Image (cartoon, rainbow, N blue to C red; front, side):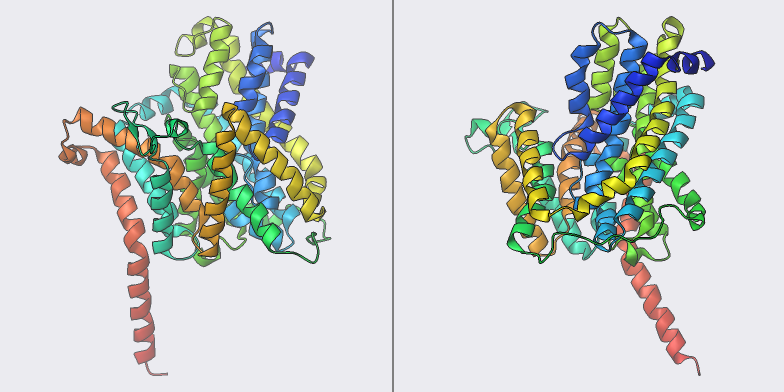
Length: 496
């Protein structure tokens, strides 16, 4: 490990890591562009690079891409990446209330702490954590996704029924396309453009960015500027009280990052939902509550360290981004897995070292620019939205080089606008769309493995635990309401 840090200290490797982190932050902050897209575009450039330099560049882009998404999520309620969806719940209300700089500072702090804590697991517990993740089968993955979806729908701001309806609607929009299990087209209505279904990126951009642009266009504002506090922010001594929340979010993010195909967005969601359940002031979540930003950002960054554990110890990619990283290693004749530590220890430990240093560089780059970044909210709103609209169209088109995705983006912009007009939360809708394919795939795999026997789930302890947590999440509001009513009635009966 020490040799890896010494190799990383060489100027060319450190330069590549800094450039990758900076590029990732910029790309992650632009709605429509993602870390995986950036890594895919720069992968050909690494063909003739030294393997250590190539790995440091790509790891920097990965960390910066996930972290950069918080910028537009907080300032404009337009998550730069899917991992930042949950950050919009409290980050954007804070910016609207004049605390944009404060929200950014908390998000950056939580991201760095989450990254460093997950690095500790990555460096010290990779084999053990990877073996634990291997105990999870399709039943566990299905019930975990179900629990995450129920948690968000129930704990989202507003009515629980509307949250569940939004999640169900998002799952319905994920159905069109080719059924991966039997290879048959479904709900395509004879359109060849519908064979691939609705793309995640156009849906995400439409629901959050385009709906925001349409709402701003329909609601003329006297001024396109928001006020920011003039105090010397950003972190106070009192923020040391967030340490348990940071630790909790980081552990949740690392653990969920271990699970292949789950991702940073689910990590942020589970962390946010857990924090809200444990809070003494759950009603403040979604209104600009600081712990909401801390929980989301610590978890989504920590998930990167968790996802790197199965990648370097077993060669199992946890997401599209990790799959591209495996491709990068394969290009350099390196095979991820247990033998990587024997055959190329400089690469295995180089990845671990690069992840830690990338988080430190991310802190330096974003912290130094936080005041300037926050001034985005002071730009004329009309001009800012016009620029964002260009990026949205470009990002949607660039995924498949198809204008069909642009129309999908516009369509879901109208859907998002309609949902918000009906006061239906957007979070459960988008998360339902994201999680539905994962839940369906794992449920089908479970049923095929058990010959359609649903009772087999009773033999899976972790699956039963996740189901129980989902059930408790649904019924707890009613139990809490009944207990509160009894306490008030008892208090009223007592003589004054």
